[in-house]
Image (cartoon, rainbow over all chains, first blue to last red; front, side, top):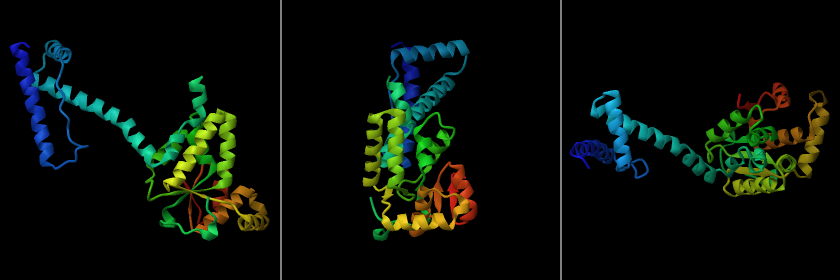
Amino acid sequence: MEAKWVKVWDQLWDRLDVQKRQTKRGKRTAKESIQVYALGEEQLDQLEQAIRKRNIPLSQAIQEAIDLYCQHQNIEAIPKIREERKDQNPLLRLEGLCARREEQA
Amino acid sequence: MIETEQMELPYPQEKSVFLDRSALEAFMDPSHPFFRKAAAFFYGLDDFKQPLITLNLIIYELHERVREQAGPEQAQFFINAIKRAEQVRVLTIISVDESIEQEAARLMLEHQGDGLSFLEACTLIVMNDLGIQRLFSFSDQWAHISREWTNLQIVPS
């Protein structure tokens, strides 16, 4: 990894680490805690391209990347929550039942 | 399935919701004009504080409808989901017995002007017996009936 990207990575890591520590201070449950994932080479390249193209500060690019990531997490969480609700209330599994034959065909 | 004489609801009646056929019909059919409204209501329920009550006759009719509309496999899925909902106590199915039938017949005679169907009369009897006031329905007929039966609250409003 180039020296510049080591710096980007360190800054990103520090930011996530602060959030993680704040989470612990707030005594959140394991479910609510923020998970930390490493960015791959491809994602770092995309981050670099975004910084060059838009001429924005590194901190802003990192924040936007985090926001985007959290947004995706929320979108993915909705079906998961719905699935949990369906275990609690099996009637929810009947949603759209009468259209499923057409979908399967 | 439970008969009303034997039944004690393990939760406050005022929070219970009686499930009309039209509510499940809308929820199961994405092309139904009230599909989204039904889904919003079902997902908005607090499963353990707002239990649902319905009649065995309504389940039989819905099973037949699902079979006609979506086929036998989906009809079996429907029955399985209903049974499971009953097991986990988010749904209580009241069995219409002879005493409810007789009461319903009497009610239909007394309120001929309202044009009550047998199923609607059974619903009114059971709701009254169990002290349930809220009825989840999209039927215009129920909106009409609720003008006469002022305790009856049709949801979603």
